[in-house]
Image (cartoon, rainbow, N blue to C red; front, side, top):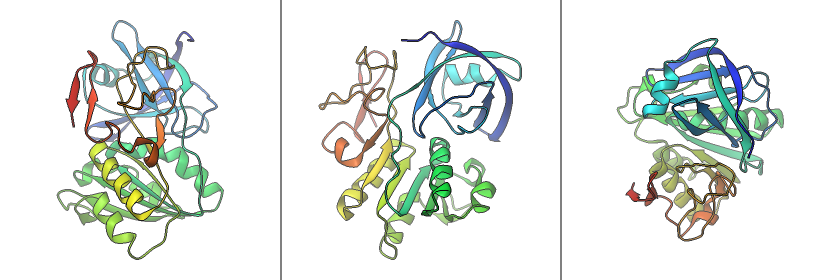
Length: 260
């Protein structure tokens, strides 16, 4: 296991009231969907996927706990430790692709979107959030060759409802041969169930509590398959996760079960 490399924060961009992008003085060769362990000395180390891989590395983060709160207090010129990349990323398949993103789950899908567009494949992106202020990069996505659809829980932007509601309606009208998703686990479970029902291959990025990040400690193993999120994932197919804990529960730092 490699020691963290200390790198400088070049820029911090405020994306939404709860989400920020950290631009790091680091170039990395990685696949969309892979992750790195980010370390703040005397605080903790946590896994984060990449929101931009070309040029200086970017990681987009939502504030959810003590680690991200401390990260949000850092600014240009401060140092963080990073090691990686780790895990398996998204694999590009299909010619008619649909991406379903919930909230900050859009972030690790952005490098995938860029790669799909470079290969000139047909792409639909469904992006959902609780409210308009939590939607990410709508202008950026709208300027690309993408069929973009949006939804908010409160109806302040796009359709009122969830990204899954849009997907349910869309697959009755359009044909897709691959679905990619990332976001809150209940949302991804519904996307996975839709994909299995419609027999459309689906890849999704799963989040679990991690310690080592390299498959040694077993903290992130999935019941009952034993698949390690850090090593075998974090990207899995819907078929791989069928019949597992996915969408039902996960485990905290102590290993205790937490229902979703």
